[in-house]
Image (tube, rainbow, N blue to C red; front, side):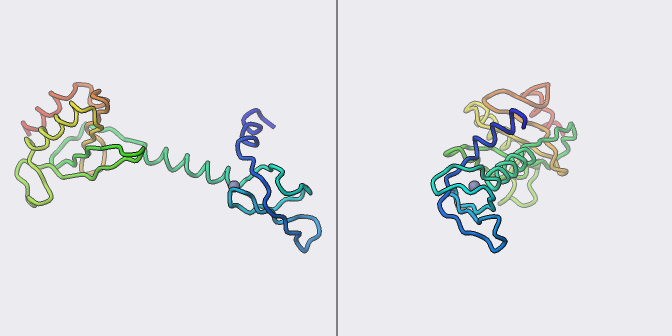
Amino acid sequence: MTHEEANAQQLFRRGIVKRTPLDNGISDEVELDCGHTIICIVPLGVGVPVFCSECLHSFIAREREGKTLEKIIYSNDRQLPLKLYIYAYEGGTKHGGGVWVRHTPKYPDEEITTPEALLAAGRAQAKGEEIRVCNGSDFCVFHSRNGQVIYPPEGFDMFWESLLRQ
Ligand SMILES: [Zn+2]
């Protein structure tokens, strides 16, 4: 067993709530205090902590999902229209839908002009909110957080100027 495996075994230990012997005479169905049911061959009593493989699996699945969602592909293709996202965080959850940006909105109810987008982004930047601007292929052409521009390297002013000049 590796060091990491040993840690995982400790981390996902759960108490036994109920054991039900299976027909095979070897193993038991074991209900754990995390709500999972696992098959166990070691005859341990109620209350004893055992390793929950289900908890480990859901932990790994959540980790993978989180990494996929956060994988951002940056691009220099900033052809309008672009989609502007400004994120607010409430109770650890991220909120914020995107809005399309065009020089002349085709659908004024759902889209904003480039100067309006610059104004909204400027306010969000000053507040340190997370801003993302994505192109039609959903690649990220601008990204900033906590007032720091992560992409593109030329920074906030040059980026927005280049959009206004398009
Ligand atoms: Zn579990």
